[in-house]
Amino acid sequence: MLYEIAASYGFDLDDYKERIYLLHIFELSFSSREHSRNVYKKLVDWDRQVAGLPADINQFEWRRFQQEYRDYIDLAKMAQLLPVIGAPVGLIANYSLIKKLGTTAMNAYRMRLLKSTSSVA
Image (cartoon, rainbow, N blue to C red; front, side, top):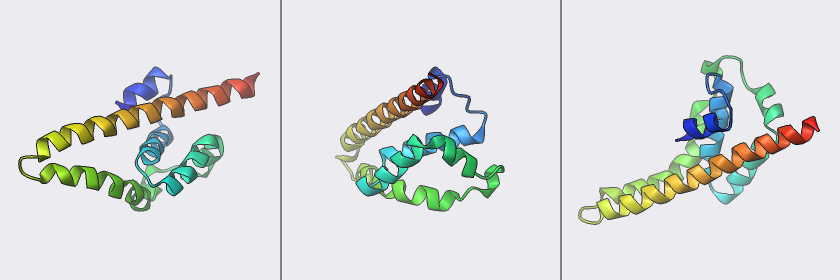
């Protein structure tokens, strides 16, 4: 879904730095409120953030990156393991997680496009 949203807004995901932007969207969607503010600031100033990314994808710090949002998702996914109520809980949890992620992604790309058009004008 995230790849399709990025492509529909005209962004090329062959560049690993664009995929990092996608991961930041994921992080923004599923992090604590305080951490989400910090991620949002990164997305607002993405041009500067890209300049600080390593040229090689293997030098990126993946472990630190994924720890914050992992805890948020773990709670929703853990409830799916419960007998009898796991399936309905999973249906509701997955639907709400996907909806939140899609809305966040569309708004993040809209923000980026608006910023690029305002800097051109």
